[in-house]
Image 1 (tube, rainbow, N blue to C red):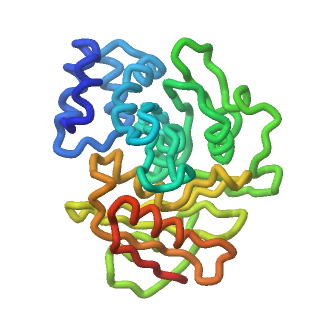
Image 2 (image 1 turned 120 degrees about the vertical axis):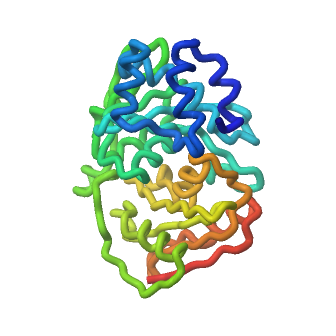
Amino acid sequence: MHPRFHTAFGELSATLQSVLLPYFDAPAFPAMFEAQQVDAIKQRCGLDDDALAFALLPLAAACSLTPISHFHVGAIARGQSGNLYFGANMEFSGAPMQQTIHAEQCAVTHAWLRGEPGLASITVNYTPCGHCRQFMNELNSGAGLQIRLPGREPATLGDYLPDSFGPKDLDIATLLMDRVDQGYQLTLSDELEKAALAAANQSHAPYSNAHSGVALEAEDGTIYAGRYAENAAFNPSLPPLQAALILLNVSGHDCQKIRRAVLAEPQTAILTQWDATRATLEALGCQNVSRITF
């Protein structure tokens, strides 16, 4: 079991501990449960979907990186597939506050990067801030996305974000988590560059068309790629580096031990991820950062 889970795991009920232990003791727990695993856990523990998500929140929060706030937020995204995905807030010392990641963004992006086509609900241990409500408004699940909070009545994103402004106001038909292929092609031999380009081809950037992707090589050589997730309100957009860091972190790797990174983006785009990507990675101790353009 990854050390970060020890405390939270020890506070679970004995029944839940015994059921979850084989998953958490696996060589590389992916911070998610597939639908069939979820069904097995619920059956053995006698929990419904909401009760299980609430029970897992402390384990999700254990994935948080909080060197600035020391405030741990966990989120569980339930996909339309029935899969459950962990999310947690992430902060980076030496980088601007704007580079931080909220727990809801983390869980949503985690699900998206794992190939989930849409979300049914998101459970979080604190009320979603306005930034996260606007971020989730970009999703293809729409205002009907279920939001679950401890001690609160069930509600929807529409309840939390009335009179919202979103992609439909700008006649955008392709929404976040819809499957896309932007069709960019380059002749590449480097696997990290290939992963960055593939991520750019699956990115969501309908407002700027500045599709971009970042691929990171972890300490053990594993590659984690992230895609740009643009937002109708612009500022809640999640850069591709942050998406890649989400997958690297929830998979149990150290964000300060990245060997190499590649950004893929258009050569003539109206905005670029290069300066922010390089600066944030340098703050994390990664100096080997390159860019490919298409």
